[in-house]
Length: 304
Image 1 (tube, rainbow, N blue to C red):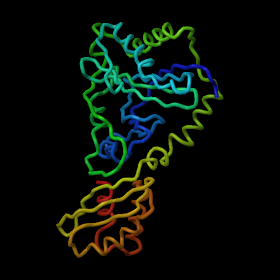
Image 2 (image 1 turned 135 degrees about the vertical axis):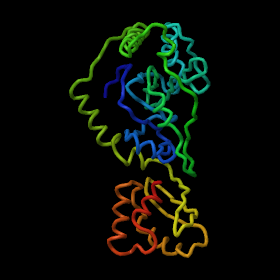
Image 3 (image 1 turned 30 degrees about the horizontal axis):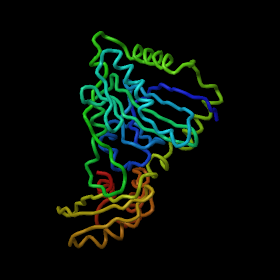
Image 4 (image 1 turned 180 degrees about the vertical axis):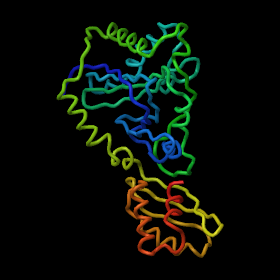
């Protein structure tokens, strides 16, 4: 409930951060998560999906202002750009409020307005694992129909590549903090109080670490799939709303389709979440309802 102006600098463990209005099922490549089980978190601001790790420095401005005049990306990005230029690096912004070095992206930015306060935050790729970043942000190969905002992919680079002398992440972070403290005068360092940490943990538990926010908040969509039976493959579609299966439909002339449609109803209204659907598929098998494809085949169809 504090009304002070804040600048925050923070580092996250490896994670995928999606925009508020994005579709989890479009943005997140399930095969990547199978190899690298990192958390996927939906943030409060709009914009595209980003990858965080220990080599990425995040910055946030939480400031008071006049209603109607709070959205001002340049006001918050330019001090960061000026700092990077002070290191002899030719940083610049683009029309999407990204920061780039020689055409390659090092920072994405987004904002959220609440009454007379603005939250502006961005990333800074200092020494991120770019190979994992590329894999993490590779679009989901499935065909998905929705009305969500998709990420705009672009080439990325690390700031450390353009610094002549060897430096550490901590050096870069402390230099940036000192720069901002000089730029936003008066300014002093502040640490969270124990009760504030408790409030943060409560918010994480009740919202930002929940399936309902991170996955089910996604807009309704339809996943185009292929199902294999008796050596033949034919199209199918899974319709999702609020993260739950609303319908599974099959196309083609395969004689198994009527039975598949009947069995598919076992999954209706369940969360599109692997543990829930595995249990439902196992129940099909246990109750002797599987006469067409096995429970393993159902899970393969639903998630591969």
